[in-house]
Amino acid sequence: MELLLKWLTEINDFLWTYILIIMLLGCAAWFTLRSRFVQFRMFKEMIRLLGESTGRHTPGEKHISSFQAFAVSLASRVGTGNLAGVATAIAVGGPGAVFWMWIIALLGASSAFVESTLAQLYKIKGKDSFIGGPAYYMKKGLGMSWMGILFAVLISITFGFAFNSVQSNTICAAWEEAFGIDVRILGGIITGLTLVIIFGGIQRIAKVSSIVVPVMALGYILLALTIVLFNIREIPAVFKLIVGSAFGWEQFAGGGIGAALMQGIKRGLFSNEAGMGSAPNVAATADVSRPVKQGLIQALGVFTDTLVICSCTAFIILFSHASLSPDVNGIQLTQQALSNEIGNFGTIFVAIAILLFAFSSIIGNYYYGEANIRFITNKRSVLFIYRLLVGGMVFFGALTSLDLAWGLADVTMGLMALCNLIAIILLGRQAFLLLKDYMDQKRAGVNSPVYRNGCIPELKDKGECW
Image (cartoon, rainbow, N blue to C red; front, top):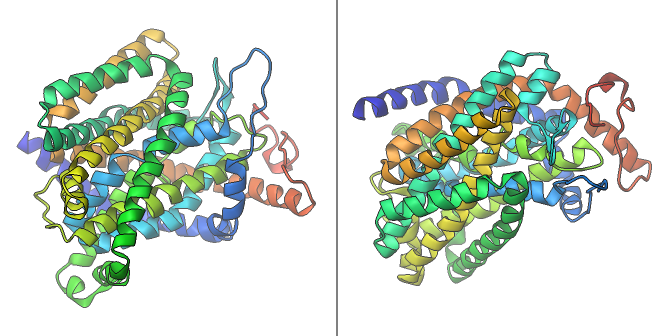
């Protein structure tokens, strides 16, 4: 086990230090400039679209609404990364890691827009809903079936196995801390509930997520805002600490800036998934009148996840002056911080919150795997086996160490992100053509622009569902 952990650490250091940080920031900056800062100038439009009914209900067919697709993707985003991931980033990289989480979210929202718009363009009709994602735009947009299969394998392993191990590990650690519950018992219960829901398919996953996600997110935000109000005088000092730790001379001399940058981007990506190629799988399921609409809504999800919920956790930890030690389990650090602020109820609240956050992530993560298993093969036996293996990894995560769970997640996340970034760089121009046409229609007075195959000559015959 120690040898495996060492091997994973070495791969992570090389992959993230020399390749992914440069590519993630480079792509996010390029997409931001190329789209003329779409994530900022169209923020109001994102809010409007989220509340707009965009489903086109054909009799006899089932559809996933734009909001349901947003909720499923947010279910995967809003989870362990927001409570445990932020704590781990601060403990290892210092308060400066929070600054880099903000940067990767602000810039990365443009990457989220591009990948989700492409997923909508190249989606196909499935039995119960539309199906799509990076594997599909790699095959249909780039003409590289092998790349699509490679991505499908990587995301199925990353989300179905690695990430779900992290989620169950965090739930069990939090409940053991709060209630002293044996991780084997709780792990078994979580595994059973997971199997019940995922065997119900995307319709059941979407319904559960659309109920659980708003409730859990609003509850956590309200608590965090209450704590912020009680500590409002400390906000300037906390911002100064975050920025100072990200750029300070002391941190530069001690190598702390590199650690903050690395942890901020890694944990930021784990949390908001911008550019990773995960959210496009569910963005493609939405029944909308044009691809750009879901692209904008998914970009809003990045802001919701990192700038709101992750920041809430960071402020709670920094307000509390909890001991920042890499040896402390990430979720337990968050529990300690809340306990310092509101007493023992804080530990219990985090345990309940992480159960909702992380469990919704488990079922959202599973869907990403299912969509890509279906890309590889339509055999029901393969999907049945995959569902059982996902359940097995949920139980494994409850029993394994935090370091091993995170190590495996970082490696597989890095590889699939690398694969997706290459694809969206090559296909990005198509997303920008769709955005330009959308804006042209808006300027012409069309309140709800509609896309039809052939209306953009360069994209003729690119999307079979349009």
